[in-house]
Image (cartoon, rainbow, N blue to C red):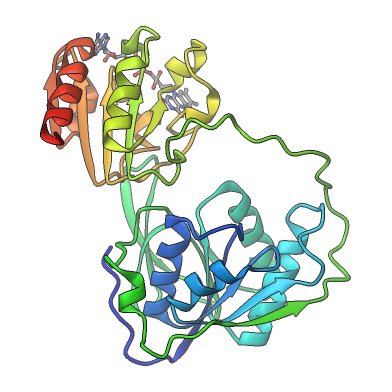
Length: 328
Ligand SMILES: Cc1cc2nc3c(=O)[nH]c(=O)nc-3n(C[C@H](O)[C@H](O)[C@H](O)COP(=O)(O)OP(=O)(O)OC[C@H]3O[C@@H](n4cnc5c(N)ncnc54)[C@H](O)[C@@H]3O)c2cc1C
């Protein structure tokens, strides 16, 4: 969606970020969307550094709400308590979070505490707070509005177009936002984090945020090499069907679909995937769908913008070669 610039700051938006190390693309999308709603305030899980504050200044953020004493070792409840405190203090009527499982958990708790309507997996939000989302395994697009004074929305990555240069688009008087810390004494019982282990770094973007996803299914025969090469030349992530995951060819974190990740990239390249309804549920809102399948009757061609009937082991290396040649 291309956000419409706001003309009057009649509404206050609160963006709930999940990390403080840097602004990810999905975070910037939330901030751009918040800017179309009205005055923007932000919640962060830890003390923000100068680099983050400068990045937030470019989005004309007024206040950054952080927990006193850092994030602690508890799940969900501190984030909920902090966002609730910030929402009450700022009078925000629109709360925006990225559409991740963790954020959905926070959004649900917040909905109860603030008596707010929660709309998940939003792909567009109008100025009059009407949200667009895709439902029933991607088969229907619905427009819905919260009847409560406060709306909480989780927004799918890649749903919002970013200005080419956010800093240039920021008001000339942009200055670092004020940092407001909150003491969170009563966060209630909660699960504690007892350890953290990072996923092995692939050098590729995260599947849920990637602008390009190259996904493989049973038709790969277990060789994801050609898909990885195409993903790398396009700067994308690698995804998979459940059949490929069940075969043990790739980890479950790569599964796209009803029981896997929902992705909404600008480009989804489906390779050797038949296009079952459960797979479509996770990728149908992609901007452009390219399908490579040797069976011209494969259901995936019903939703593909571009279909290539052929063996992926021939088609993908040719595509990689061509793209590399184009880039010199
Ligand atoms: C409750 C439930 C939840 C599910 N959740 C998910 C989910 O989250 N995600 C998901 O993906 N599935 C899910 N499924 C499974 C889903 O129904 C399908 O079984 C699955 O998506 C099939 O995977 P596939 O397309 O890779 O395999 P197949 O259906 O076997 O298709 C393989 C395709 O590869 C093509 N092919 C073969 N060789 C080549 C080649 N060399 N070059 C090009 N094309 C080739 C074939 O023509 C075929 O179309 C779920 C099912 C259920 C019941």
